[in-house]
Length: 172
Image (tube, rainbow, N blue to C red):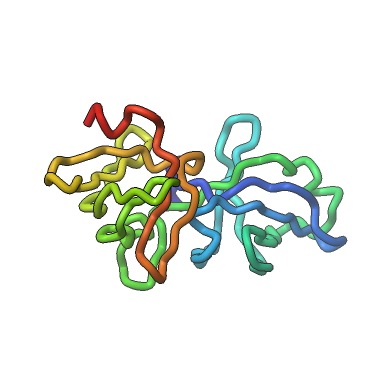
């Protein structure tokens, strides 16, 4: 079980029910594609702590219910509220690629519906992912792939709508 601090699944928002389950608010990238998980890492006091998952239930939108092995009561898990949850290893996917790699070929648009270009590569750079986007004049544009910048990912249309900071497209 390898810890990967780059793959944030979400944050525990509350205790769910009386059987020791927690409610997790998922990161936007996981709202349409929940990975199959056997274990996760909780960030407790800044340190990763591994937990085995005994049950998981996706309740729609951005909510996931998790139950950890050995934690069957609300009293045992109340201290986990607010903790961030990280996935182990690589992002799983049905095609053997990471979920981020399935975005290659998607087209990036700004919030005002201006096309930036297609994603040609995804670069992992010191804990941050960068989208390598080909501009209309075939220049390479690097855009941080961060949850605060993502407005929507439409998998059926293969587009990513982003709030791109002023000046970012001009400096590339």
